[in-house]
Length: 189
Image: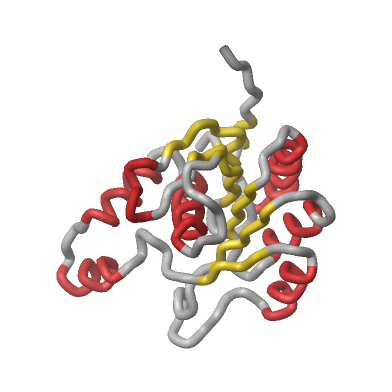
């Protein structure tokens, strides 16, 4: 049997980022070596990289794909990208697994497709938890973290971080092998 502390935030959002970073750093001190964190403009990625700098950890920062907000636009600010890399983090920029080509069909034909069903199902547990699952698979797909490892995942709702969990990693091709083992923090609403 195992007893763990779970932190429930009253509200989602970036005001929870600092606490989530502390929780992830604490997990590193417990022996976790793979940390995957979501970031859009790079603020959360930089904060995590600063906190973990000098520790024996594989930090992977996952950003939105180019064109996510608008055509030909990259949200990750160049100065934040440079800082994350200088602090030892790796960066993955690619398509969000549940925002793939199906999104285009859905918008055009008003249909519902499997990836969208998965996304909506995961959102029942929170936007951050959905993103945590996605970024772990994306990092595996890119070869930046190994499969079948317990990984600390950090993500949030809109901006910042409000969710931390431990996930058994798998590539997207093996989505059904992804397991949320522990939820360390999340918004209650």
